[in-house]
Length: 229
Image (cartoon, rainbow, N blue to C red; front, side):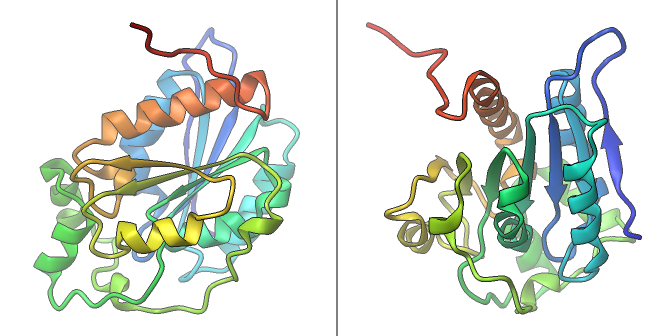
């Protein structure tokens, strides 16, 4: 069984939903600690799993979490990098999807320095990855077989987060993939591949919370805050 990482709502607060994170190439669930703690503080339960390309048991674990009636809904799958492809594959079991840094083509880093710069501009997260013995360096170079991306068969709300400066999965190509679908794409100016752990991680987390709060009202995602002149 793949190891998972958990963050819960503060004592005394009712949980507002459950997020199940599927990590990307080279990652494990623990690299999403900062995101998990932040969403936990907002009373969402977070369960972060590993990289399905390295451990297929992750998918069984995700399915069990989605079926676990003790976890509060709505239940939302979040996939980063290749984890996004697997999250979309499990969409029918979830109440919504969040796709982060969806990969569109193979990528070759050439060096560890290039890989870490492509992943994140956040010095704190760069330092964590560099010191993490469980993080697999060079994994972005791999091109594993992935489930087909059939967004036309996804019948739940989908939020996509993507960095404008993502060199692993260029934004122009991602726009083409999402074109014609009901995916709500939010781009981050200057953002790199690992959007949830990038320099704009606070803004990314706030974007996720707003999506979740709208989802709690209705799958149609009614607007709950808007600017006015």
